[in-house]
Length: 113
Image (cartoon, rainbow, N blue to C red; front, side):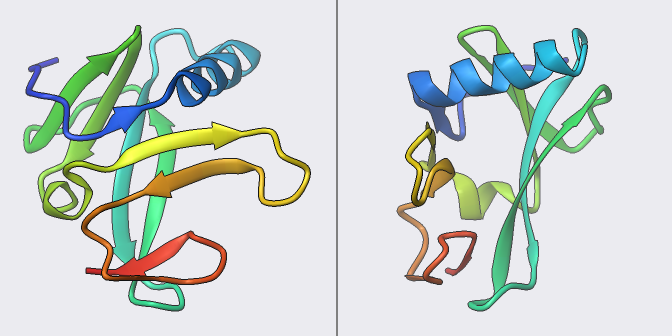
């Protein structure tokens, strides 16, 4: 896996949750793919998924033992973003704190840049 500078930051809570999911699903060799795609209320939605392969145009890095990859097309929209995780009863889950988002929907899962 070719490494680049970290495009996004994962908080301690996000790192713990990603590792817990990977362990629970026995994804020992997986990496976390973070990306964006067209859709949602405001134009783009965030994607989080686990994969085992890195594509040639991916930008990859590691955060506290979590291997992360971002495709080249998503990188401009995600650079500087922080991925957080909260166990709050209301509004808990992964949170995308993105300085590139000019507008976000109420649920925080889509944005426009």
